[in-house]
Image (cartoon, rainbow, N blue to C red):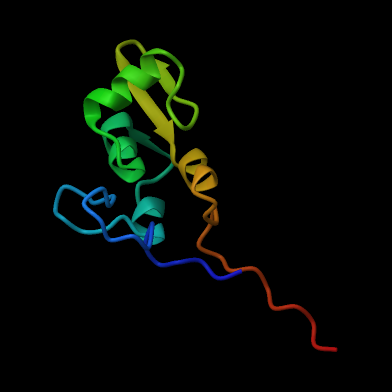
Length: 98
C-alpha cells in the first residue's frame, strides 16, 4: 500500500497545517517522537486548540490522551494509527516474485 506524502488531498481552508504554514506530512509526524502535546495533535487533526482541550476533558479526543497533572500528551503512534498511516518509516518488504 502506498502512503500519501501529505495528510488529506483536499486543499481546502480546513487543511491541517503546522504553525509555519507547512503541511503535516507522515515524516513530520514521525519526527515528533513518541509523544506530543495536545495543541500539536489538534493541528494534525485540523482542530482548534480550545476544541482539543474540550474534547480531551470529556474523553472525546480522536485518540487516547495521557494526562499528567494539568498537562495533556498524545502518543504519536495513536495519531498515526487513527490516520491509517504506517507507524514506522520502514516500508513493508516487496512480496516474493512468482
